[in-house]
Length: 263
Image (cartoon, rainbow, N blue to C red; front, side):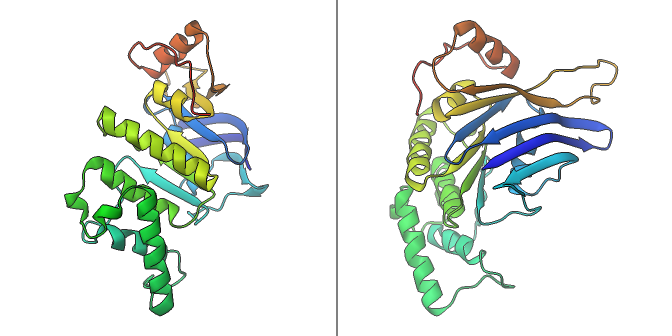
């Protein structure tokens, strides 16, 4: 489904990513970990179409990924991307309206009625059926992320991109969000790419884990080389020394390697 061929990304003289070569099959759940600033979110934005590629090619079904976001790729950020002046239901209806190729995105008549019914069903899926008439400032952090996920899924994307979506949530709420994302991934047969700063979360949620890191470092010119995917691991039991090595690179607190996975 996705193929990256020798991808490089630079901003002027600063190299962010170099030599990315990967293939991803439809239905995989890929988690991306690495130190801050190593290019994880940049790669996600390339998949979305909001970041250009400096060199190489990134293909979707054998064709270059469009250089703009599309309905086939939904995204959820850590910062809640919701409209504060709209109710929960109207937020999701608006996301549906934006799929129209029109100046306003407004829906009328039968289209509006169908969108309302579809948005209501989607909000039931993410556990917000009790909050349809609330405004974002009346929601908890976890509820806002549920709303953002509903906005992303209303377009029926094939690919769901998650950029540290649970980093600001309390542990108990994060656990609930994990269950929700896994449920939606299976139910909607999504292909998921999720950036996380939490290695344990990456192993729990994903079927495959990528570690982004620099293989080449020049102390005199720290921006001369970019990060690449240094580990591409099928999720499962892992030797504790390899887990600790990755954990040290990512910069996490010491943890035991996980022995059970979502897959």
